[in-house]
Image 1 (tube, rainbow, N blue to C red):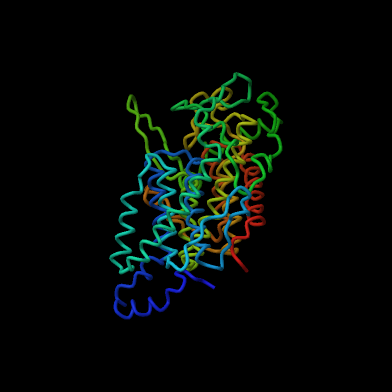
Image 2 (spheres, rainbow, N blue to C red):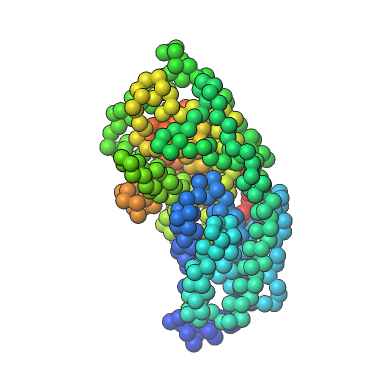
Length: 442
């Protein structure tokens, strides 16, 4: 039974009778408002060039804060405290004070999002808009104030917990050391940037027992001499695919590029273009499907949160392997041994190749979203339209995850087996989250 505002029903009946044309419940409890709030954080992440794994941390903690508020007000949902072993019990709303839980969830999301992003305070203007929206819609001042107090209490608890995940310690950790050993990752053009987040596997996981819980098999041995070797055939396959891409394959590569910071070089001029990170893209997809399925406010928060956890743990699992195998990118091999001027279709990101991050996190997200919404949920993904890239339609989120995975081969930045193994790794992550986190009562 849902109890968004405790014993508020008599008050609501009087209030709506007097002000039925300005019902704050209809405004604040609209699940689309929550999706718009997540999108606002997504925009801030984009503006500040967050790498994809750091972006996933922002989404995970902000959504967990909103979820814990939601679970306190809706008995259909269960707190994650104890299910995530290191998450402590959250504060309870003070009885008999009346709290509007959806409003408190929005505020808690923003407070945590504000604190884990840089620069801190990036969501202040948006929070002021939310507060004004609630007031303009007629939310009683007592409920407004009580909701803020409760939102802040939960947000503060989540922030205190988040600070123990080893993130701050990894900010001063050593940088990746490049070696000349054949087959190891080397910086790639045009930026030749250092390896991004080589210590991300040291970040505390949420549902996984450890970063290496689903450690994949060793990648094929680097070998460009034996034309029958797995590696030789894989790298030449990438070159051949990119050299003969169809318009459809190019669109797929562009659609899932999700490069938060692409460095463009034209002559002596350099400039950057930005898109959502892959985690931001999947957050958008959650909103699209939740709206299509007519999910209410609580289910929408639940879907974002569970998917956010899958993305977060998926990146940790993937980065654990990336900096274990330190595998060379196709661009490096092709330029050195086959075609010095060859370029991939999309820009190679600055970290080791194996396994594919897109494959891991997309498969993990698809597993949990399928668990929430069901199989074969068709939808049209309009996430990339704001970047001038046409929509794509899918018959299921798993179909989308498979396309996201193969897009990296079309882009020329991954070997096919790295995507296939990565997808299996992601499915294991997602399946474990479904098994361990029983967030919604049957």
